[in-house]
Amino acid sequence: MVASTNGFFARDYNLELGWNNMRYIIEAAFLQATLLGRVLILPSFVYARSCEYENRVCADYATMVNRGDAVDNDEWRELPIDQQMGWKIPIELMINITHLRHAHPVLTTADYLRLHGQDPSSEASNGHWTRDLYHSRPNLITGRFPSLKVIPNSAYDPEDVVRVDRILDDDTAERNFSVADPQVVQTLYAALPAGKSILEWQQAQSALGIWGDLELDRVVTENGWRILYTYDSVAGLDYNKAAVNPIKMVAPRSALRGFETDYRHIRTNVLLLEGAVHYGRKLGGLYFTTRLAQDLFSSNVLYDFQRVDILQDIAAKMVEHMFDLTDGRLWMAAHVRRGDFVRYHWTMEATPESHIERVKRHLEDGRNTLIRLSSHALKVYDVPGDVRPDIDLHNRTPPASEGIFYLATDEQDPDVLEMFRREGAILMDDLLTIEDRRHFASTRHEHAWALMISDVRAVVEQIVLSKAAFFYGHAMSSVPGGVINLRAARGADPRTAVID
Image (cartoon, rainbow, N blue to C red; front, side, top):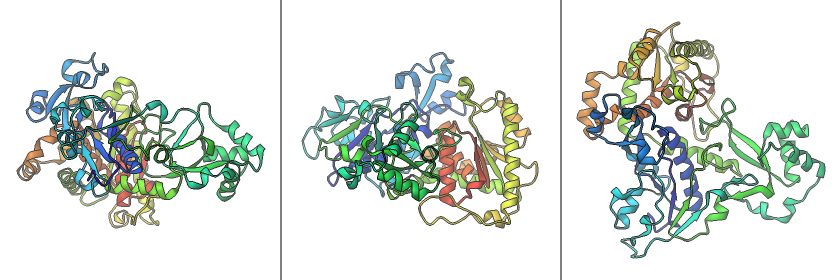
């Protein structure tokens, strides 16, 4: 696996973050590794944030840690001690690594340590790459100590740099930095937001008064700027990071720095990107110089990052039960982020009562959308691949007015959950029967315990949410991004989801 590549690519992973943040960080790391032609090293574990039962119950099956101690972060120190705990979850339970390896070579940090004669238990608890320890033993196959090159965090994309996948050959030609109309260049630079070196497509259109895409392409290209490709924001925010809704932006060629161009030539055994490079950035952590390259990465995210079989099987059983409860009608679903969002005042509504009312208003709008689409041509997201529309919207009856709906939430207050149920919500534990749990425990016994862990349950629920006829989620949460990816891959109509 390693011999046919340029070596290993490592990251300082932010294990203090929840799974869905880690998911899109890993997706970006995957892109970076493919650009470098290197084996991607993943953390061997992530941390789940809560147990559905008493902590001691989950601790019988998963290693319990104090999250603050494990990741060197004081964020949770003022919480009651039981709420400071987390559980170490094998990465293989969150991502189907076997499937991912069909697209690109991937190892865990534990694999790397074993390859270098080290105890896997020496893996850093915070997810960062240990510069000294991980390079203190020789490779068991080559007998050589692994060399290391670090890409400083400050070099990745400072304010005057636009980090792209690669610099195209024609961007190195002197003629492409020439200017046909100095006034165009001056206008574009004047339109740049403070601290930015890249313009939204609509900003460039407005600044130049050019509304046709082909004409704007021509004008910016003739004046030393480059068309770049990325993904649209949701409600003006980039927290969802879904691989849908491709857009174009423009930037001066002189500001472009190619990740592949700058770092693929390096021949150390390990190339490490220092620190975090996810916050305030688009999905993938960089921009693409061609739509083809963007589509390739979108395909990786949509089709190569799969959930493990047991979690997909559990979700399929829950979906089956939802159709039983609705007598075969279409059903709708929502994600309600509570948990630490309440503490940070990031929830959409101040109280759970107003929150569920907001959900129901959106779902009623969603029901009207489904009724309208039942007699109209269906669409799919603008994603690569042979994606066919979800014809269930035509073949099944729309949801009943004031009917039940599936609700995924991290709320744990029993009284609040009961109030959600009175408002029509069906929760995970309402769908999974004792027989279901016994079946999965008997057939997949090594992972049967995982349904006690919040972040594992959330992966199952994302799959369930993706199967709903209509979905509503929150723009400040990364959970809906994963749901939208799954919906896009299965052919859901983009009009059947609302994120606000």
